[in-house]
Image (cartoon, rainbow, N blue to C red; front, side, top):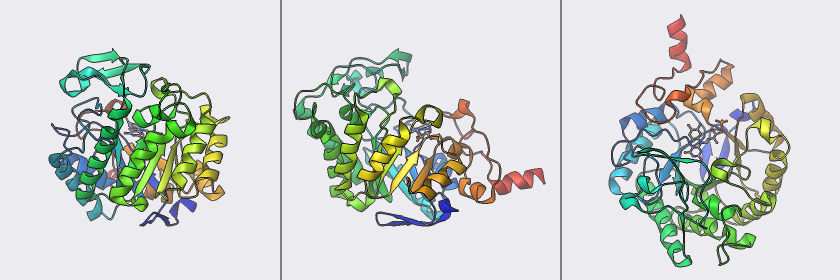
Length: 364
Ligand SMILES: Cc1cc2nc3c(=O)[nH]c(=O)nc-3n(C[C@H](O)[C@H](O)[C@H](O)COP(=O)(O)O)c2cc1C
């Protein structure tokens, strides 16, 4: 079975091609500190070829939408993460941390001292921010001045250093889903006329600066990037996604990354556009490519067998199936995810989905 052949990403050898996609679950402790419950959740999923953590904030100003969204900008958070990485490693797994800055997809009520969210241009995200006082429309962000950008790149570097201290196996830069890096890439949210807007080179500059800063700490063989060329979440758009994402993939290709990770739209919407853009990126980026977005075991096997992907990341299936590789291998049925427990809460819907053995002994 193609999903069960080993594969290298950078300097890491993975026993299979099944990746646990980054999944925000909002169950960190006060101070955005990961805890024992988080460690158990991830350790239960250690048979994945690679685990990518939920989105983790690089700075108190990077825009978290709940006190329970974890961070990695101070020592206590790094200490909490060390418990998570130890638990995963003790169970034989490997884990990258997803570093993120939410940019305009935030709200003053979510930021320290009621600061304004930041973005490339003064254009509000569409939709609602889930603030401590309930849902509120996303505000017009403060458009970052060119001189403010190095400090944000430095936040990613600081977080990357702490991630190293926390014994992660590598870092995934969150360049997807309408957050700050994605906002710079796409011209629906980036109308700048300086060195960070306009041309493809300028719009990719922030992504590439962040990537270089993280590589300086980790080495390129321990750094991956996630992009979502067609995701319209939070009102994201681009007048020519093929151009900007093929450009970004070519530029990232020159950096010898551990991998590039693409979020594709779910198959129903994706039929026309996704295969084409994924194909362009596959051509431009010669290293390992991870695809995510509505994959079943069957579609995943086809994608790997056809060579369009090297690995497949699973989101919702991993929420409900801690032993997903074993279920795929044996053809066992999958547990169904409970959406009401996706965001926030306790062990319910987080660490209590049964593994196959437990499920079988219950029915025996
Ligand atoms: C509850 C939930 C939380 C998510 N959190 C993140 C996140 O923190 N970072 C990210 O890049 N994507 C996140 N995603 C997107 C997933 O990583 C994945 O791309 C998406 O679920 C599609 O894959 P699937 O169809 O296999 O679930 C999240 C998805 C869900 C359902």
